[in-house]
Length: 248
Image (cartoon, rainbow, N blue to C red; front, side):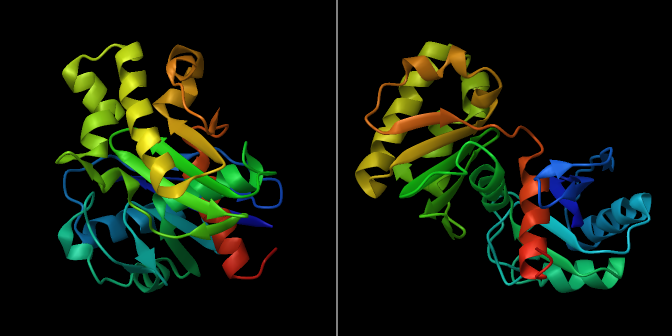
């Protein structure tokens, strides 16, 4: 089954058609220009433009940069606050004329990794971390998603984890890779004490060249780089929509 996967990246939108049985993108990607304004009417218009670029009439899965439940936006750390309590699924479905399912962006990333990527045969508790501008997280227990975790927002000694160890923090502070690895080790040890996971999957910047950072992270828990790159949230959102619309 083919589903149009859409990812809201900052204040721009990108999309591609996904084979949800294979977890593969089967079209070119189309996107909108970035803009500073992420208010609902602006992003709704961008979603409409992406769907029109594909001349798409079928199911749509959309990853959204905020916690969601049944398509309703719960908080807005990375998006305009006017989105809080908005029914994104209804708004996107209405503007596009398609059935749209909306999922937390980092949950979509985790779904791609756990269904088609490095976590596809994993059991027990798996923590997927997307380390980029911030630190996004998704947790799976025996393959089942625990939705809307915000592990990057946890504070250690008064400092948010993502402010301490994200790729943005590394670049802003000019931290070398080995030092960054130590910061990440400190964070992962904290997560170990909280969740006792069976495996961590690290995505984002680290997964591009894992050999430059991961060998310097010394923890007890199994540690693997993510297989999907920037396509993870598109694939995961499409798969989520297919499951919710009972297409697979």
